[in-house]
Length: 228
Image (cartoon, rainbow, N blue to C red):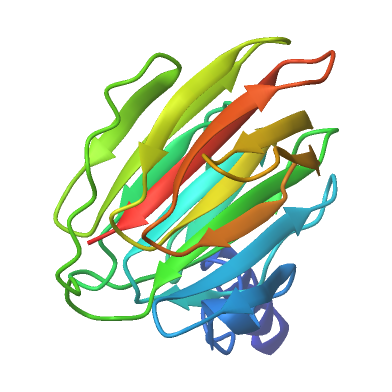
């Protein structure tokens, strides 16, 4: 009877959601989540899961923007719940989540045969700072979202294509989804060439007016965000 009771207790424990008592860490301390840039406005994390790898339990508490630059299929598990297999990701997907209103604790594991690579922009200020991003009504830019925290666009340029000049009215960040060779065009200055790699990102201060020309042989896709 004693052995039977012990077996039942063990089997009951195994039936509970895995690691429900595991220590929860802030997202910037989670496995495979690496802080790579920060200033007074943002904290940028590079999140890369090799195939079969993933994070420990971690807490999201900042409003955040995520740009998926390498897609996979992740299994997620909220603390105290059973794992749930997510849908396959889509490269270039851009999402905004208001975690400051509803913090979220989970862990995630890459179940695909390809890497999962997400660039996560945490908004450090609890409220908007009062910036007003301007519209980008020029060919090439597609607005992705416009909410109380930020405004985001996608820019796609085929070889030889250009985007007319726009003016940054607010600080922000550029994330590279498809890399290549571009030139930034600023009136009165020599064109400035850049070689962009997948997953690269660049902080951009307000006040600059510049155009972009694809000077390479491959398609370039960028996501640009301006803060409010």
